Length: 327
View 1 (cartoon, helix red, strand yellow):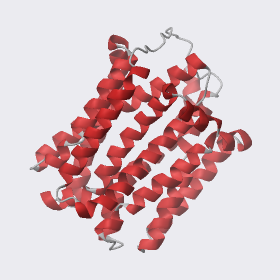
View 2 (cartoon, one colour; view 1 turned 180 degrees about the horizontal axis):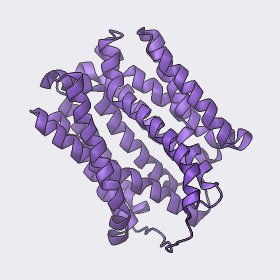
View 3 (cartoon, rainbow, N blue to C red; view 1 turned 90 degrees about the vertical axis):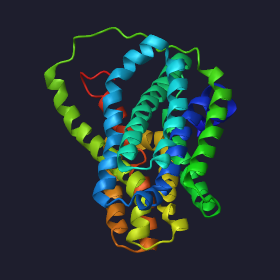
């Protein structure tokens, strides 16, 4: 819990973790309104899935160019550009009047999501290096906490807000204001220069393949819950609109708890055991979700969140300690 005390005692550390929360507050708000957007545009499940694919495509197209972007304008400036851009772009799917516009807007959301994701992780890594502190796991915990806040508070407000676009616009405007007030704590930071190295050997790639596959499956599972949980709750478990976002809220809540205690658990049991046990718990959780019962589905979402909570951080930690691999 030393990391929690660190971020709450100094704005230099709280500001980066709030960036993580910002990203998922907006994702949480988006998630609870997916059924309404689907109904407005009269989309089939296949059409929705294809539209969401454009978000992932935008992220994939962006990530290779982020390091050069950071180098050209500076890390702090890149972070501020990314967070403001994401706050603005996330509103666009709510305004889309056609399927084509929805796909295009989600592609834009994906671009800025990828940019923000990479830059804020780089920012935390750089601050950790400079100050010799550790708060990466807590940062990811605040990401989960943000999702819980966005979906939970959003579900409570949903019955009182006639148009979803006003909800997301209000949340985005508030987050832009807060981040503008906090950006002075990182705006001038530049990422450390790294020397190019040719010491990587092809044989060192083999152990990374399995870890990359696990990471892909975990992130795909997280993405599925973001994009489909509310729709599943409404259409399969027949939950009310107010309860539809509760699955995503519980998922993020248990994930936040796991990540806040992740460093201590890792020190006690090691990365390998955590990855295995966490994946097993998540698999059981998905089985419970498929029961079709509202109550059991909520319990299942909680189990998945707890199981996956520190798998991705441990994958980074484990791969970074492999012989011949440099993070």
